[in-house]
Image 1 (cartoon, each protein chain N blue to C red):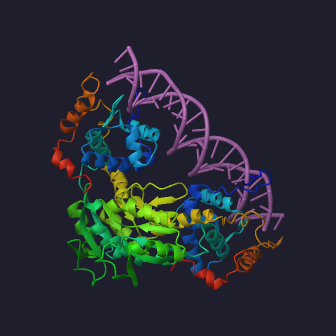
Image 2: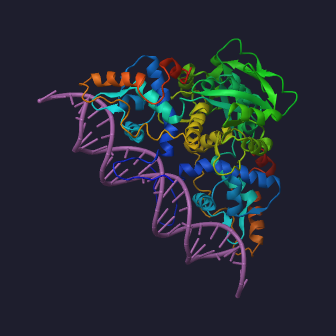
Image 3: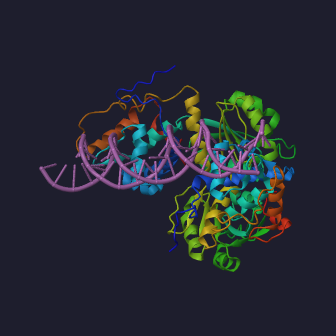
Length: 269
Length: 269
DNA sequence: TAGATTGTTAATCGATTAACAATC
DNA sequence: TAGATTGTTAATCGATTAACAATC
């Protein structure tokens, strides 16, 4: 049990999640400056390059320590190093990618992957037709090798690019093998034990969020729908029949007059 | 100028962003229930399926309207429809994908893309060697056709899967052509005029966030680094030389003893 | 009617932002 | 010293959560 002194800020590792999520952005902007041999940068300039406002950036950096110089700005190289260290990028992170379809292929070839401390330890697939082929110069190996690879190469990060149906099963196996961080590209909610981190990247969700805002731009705002009494709402439908009533309403009412089959077309495969 | 009445909740279209971002999750879970012909679901069950807590789910739904039945739950079909409508998925959204490398290919083939109202209107690339090939059954067309395609097919959503160097330029052209929502996979901060929405998906950022948490698990917490006085901090370095001093410190001090060249290996390409 | 479950309230927590004293 | 810019404070805003009255 660790003490959590309060006196003169022995801060108990309290970097807010929102800040952590922005550190890679700052790092990227700083790296670009570093490559142009820019020696120092102000919070204002760096914030602009990272696409945030400068107050937020300074607040974020204040969680890391006092790495700036008043009146001058931040030393680019020094900050690159400090943020890299904070993010754990000064060490090497072997990762396995499971599911070598289109997306797995793309990831294996992704440049920003190999750089920044991440190293593809292995590509894995369950399909015998895929096993043995190569992607990004690496052989695709069979899932059966998962456990031995994770153990021998000390893999703690796994990337799942399988079809949704296989994702939970693959996840279980990764966790069982000792992986404690998972990046999930399959459109599935993964259940993991405590102590395992999951982040997900969901292409279709991002598009849906864009569609929501786009809809509001074209003046089309469905304003009324949810606000005025929902379609033909009958009163007192009886205890359980209420649900059935809604079902009928869904099929018939509403402003959208498309039939059911049309509506199905909108739904996921 | 729209009035914003306050009386009995004619809610001025105030769905919080955090809620919008979760609607696709609910929709996915509901769709799965719908396929299994489950007629109704409680907030507790649906929340579990979507991976959120039930209080949050009920609060989220309350922004859409009162679509549930006390004592019973929610009608699955009805909710699917309401959420689809709210997200704008009852209409068709043609999208263009620009940059048909590995990732562009993967996206063109992505199933969850074609479903849910999104339709690939065109695949575009600037490379003559790529133009003319096909991906996911569609021909790759030249960037020069961008403007005419956007106009004729009423494309309002663009997906950028180009190398980082080309992203801003492609973005400008998309915006100029009339696209008002952009999903950016290139690791670049895009500048767009007001009224244009940008969302980004950044593979390497997700991994970096995982690495941060992973580092903290292995007991390795860099606890001290930023807390105890940063390495060998000299006092009063003189007005501008302070930065140079830090540079020296960065190269020499710290607990990580790797040399500069080693550190470079961690940085992006 | 009794049991179940929603929709809403209110408390809490975390994130953002402007402003400015500290200090290079 | 004067000008610039950080690091921090405090106010504000938005999101989460538990609890429970309303009501099926």
